[in-house]
Amino acid sequence: MFRILLVDDHELFRSGLASVLGESSDMVVMGHASSGEEALDFVRKTAPDLVLMDINMPGIGGIEATRKIMQHAPDMKIIAVTALSDDPFPNQLLDAGARGYISKGCPADELFDAIRTVMAGNHFISGDVAQKLAIGQVMGQGGGSPLKKLSAREMQVMVMIVSGQSTQEISDALFLSPKTVSTYRHRLYEKLDVSNDVELTHFAIRYKVVDQN
Image (cartoon, rainbow, N blue to C red):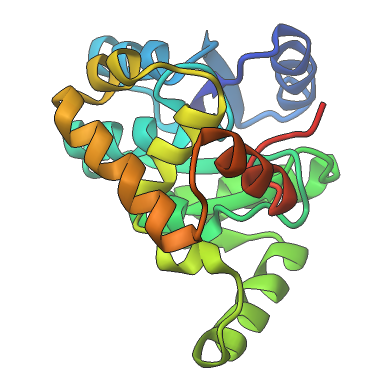
């Protein structure tokens, strides 16, 4: 029986996902978390077999939560769950240690397949995401998305900035000094050719790093 932790900041989605997983005879939901911080705390106290991890959440978010969980439990199986078929984060999540990457709109059979594949020690990436990754690799030497210039940490800081978190809040969440956060902010400005947080937010919306709504 695979014991699964659901991590998403929307209770309704977690409830729906738990209901779908309840249809399987070899899977059980052992816990819920609404943030990366809660997920990390849960894993430290009660080790699940697998984590289904949302990406865009308040606080440290899915990328940083994945990285911290893998530091604590290197053998943990994590599948990232995205709301967007062309989400810009596959490489960052896979680099952080996720073993799978699926869409929130995937059919139940694909979800079950992803969990069983990852639990068997393999990677699973949904077809549409895999295609975009392949296209991105082909385009890599020709430029592609400017997001490719960013490290996983820079991407995480950008997400937190455009989500409205202050320098001090980011500092506290990521255990960085405020000076280091400011350094990341200016590095983002330089790499993405923007001048301030407003322009950075417009950039993030344009490249679907955050939802426009």
